[in-house]
Amino acid sequence: MSGGAPHYFLGVDGGGTGCRARIEDKAGTVLGQGLSGPATTRLGIDAWASVAKAFGTAIEEAGFGTAEIARIRAGIGLAGIGRKGALEAFRAIAHPFASIDFVSDGIAACLGAHSGQDGAIVIAGTGSIGLGFVEGRDLRVGGYGFPISDEGSGADLGLKAVQLALRAHDGRHERTALLAEVMQRFKDDPVEAVAWMDRASATDYAALAPMVIRHADQGDPVGRRIVQSAAEQVDTFVRVLFEKGAPRVTLLGGLASPLEPWLAPDVRRRLKPADGDAVSGAIILARKSLCSR
Image (cartoon, rainbow, N blue to C red; front, top):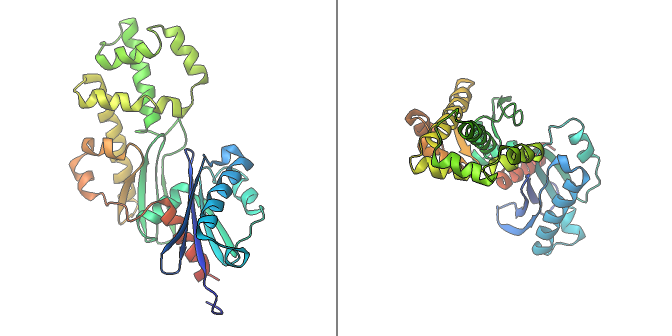
């Protein structure tokens, strides 16, 4: 480190549901934090506005002026940064920091989960993906987007529930409490379900997942089969990541806790709790930029 001026480290987790920022000093003391709305590259330049609002609040809380801001090393984890042209577009945006690096929000979460060491994560939320890094190699399993991928995700649970509810409505499948409740959402009218489908996003399907899990936990046979099938997909993610050389795997995402009891015993035993979150991972990225310069 050159000179006596301290360096500061900014980490931002820009996800599809919200954006969180944190500034730390060299010792890891939190100096400021900020929150804002969704930050995903699907939102284009609005994603940067959300990121900037979050780190702006953190900078304000830290009480930083121009001199301190110029000594910030920033790490930004951003949903959808792998989309064509996204990384280049964000790198071209002017910023006031000493350095800035971008990774996907998933990679930031993986860095945080394993304190920057080799390892992998399985994210089970609205979507699903397995990713990590081992000895310089990137690992990836699934996560190609709903509905063609994202097995075991909230969106996948919701889709299966709607499919089976329509079959039950026709008399092609047993009608259970879960499927009856799904059809109630559509006023027991398949035409309403089709109209909803025409505009529904992965997030809309995932909104049905808590209902599916609730019925499964209450013993609904269809709910249990749907959730068990999702858990088997997550089992496969975890096992494949170990087969690819990951020394440790962590399960993350909104469905991690509800699905964990449904996982195979051998998978549950091998899972490692997360050391930190995606903001921690983004700060690790920022610290690495200092070491590499």
